[in-house]
Image (cartoon, rainbow, N blue to C red; front, side, top):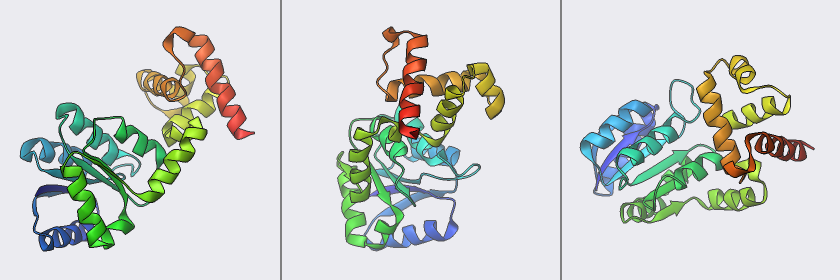
Length: 215
């Protein structure tokens, strides 16, 4: 297979290239940040793109956002996301970004070459490869809707629970009003609050969910 690798760790990128070469695959590009991954994936159209969730500059969700951007521009892209920890919100976003051809593995799984290459093959064929720990956490997230929120969305919801308006939230988080509005819409969607419920009702319902979880 032709593969693009993205990780800010030089050692991990080199290690992946050695593992993939040993398995008979070719790394056509190796990059260290999200925008470079998007550019390389769209240029080379690899059989699979491997990307770390956390990359510069904030080391939060750059890799995931890059993966989602690639799938928006190229819906048939096959993507395998690697993460140091199980992050349910990121896995949920990735799975919602396309019809199969995605994988989410913990980095520890890379050490087992058989498991890793099996996941690559599954993703390349259009299947879904999820780390067992990710599956367990996703099942738990179904019982707790707030578990599907990203850390940023949790922060927005916490400020919302303090009674702050979107403009006040934007000021507190030092982001644009548009960014806050996008976050709130995603929060409403993940909590199953439909637009026809009304903006005020959705805001109250979201805060109630947050307070119940906090309690």
